Image 1 (spheres, rainbow, N blue to C red):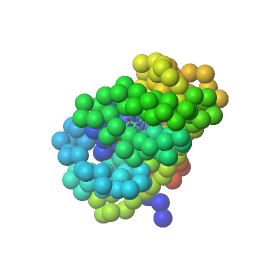
Image 2: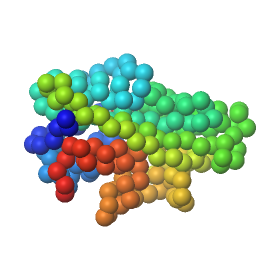
Image 3: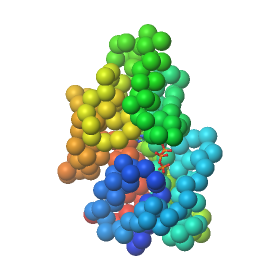
Length: 211
Ligand code: ITT
């Protein structure tokens, strides 16, 4: 049976871009969101071999440490021509300094080496696996994706990570050129476009009271 989220919820991420998005997604539901950073929670090692496994590692670690329900996202960019890379290693491709310009340039270099110059050969998708874990080990898990193509050079300064290189299908602006409402706002304000927004809609259906 699915479990409802009520009261306090730890947002188990150390990525400020994700934290903002997860807070914005939760805002209409009257949940008191507390960040892992504020609680001083350690970052667990992401040893899973899938987005889903890593999301649950992060949510379970935070729920156990904080003795509260905890909400984690594991996400990444999956590039078809690179056999799915960087995938679950999307954060690691940016290195210790979190240099996503360098990570986007690395992807572009690899695409050029493979002759991937037309949009058809540059298909990619973002994946978001969301997990809510309770201190008694109950889990709720959902996953979603958004399809698009990679552009070069990157465009826009909004969002975070790989956003400036990602052009979602049926749109003319990259995630880096979109407002936060356009990227991940839910109806009626937005379209629920991003991978994280789409996964969140699924989570809301099973775990949150209607807005
Ligand atoms: P936490 O584990 O603390 O949540 P993280 O940044 O390490 O933070 P992940 O392991 O899930 O998170 O790595 C996902 C990476 O994929 C993230 O660092 C971004 O670079 C990229 N990514 C995920 N969602 C994205 C989005 O909406 N826009 C752009 N890049 C995104």
